[in-house]
Length: 144
Image (cartoon, rainbow, N blue to C red; front, side, top):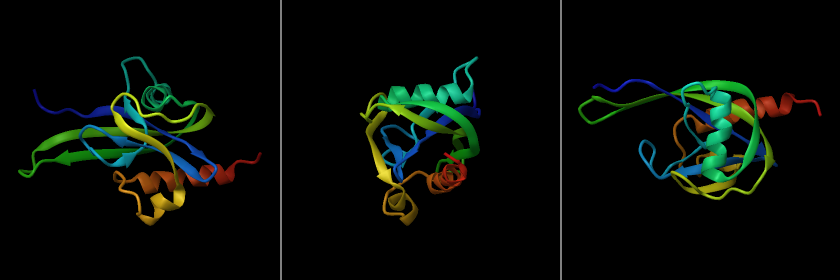
């Protein structure tokens, strides 16, 4: 059976000018920082999946608010054969409770200054900076 695209969701949380990221324990992106997330289960919305995966990977509880963007992850091997194909639904979430503790398939879970992501000082998965920029725009547009 060939490789088929898989739908996944990522939880995007910004709090006090920091973004919650996890270090991946498995491929693709092993050892890189990215958003908590994972596969969308059959019958589950991507928004619900983002909140569930966030809780499973970090112990943090959040309310999914809005779809931010989609991210294509297409990984090929050295022979250019397709290894992975994910469509990630980036979900902007509102922090509710909990402190990040690495669980499930992540080796670390931490709040990182947005400046570390944007400066390239943190080894992140592709497009993490782009998604953070989109989330920051939404944060700034809120009128509390």
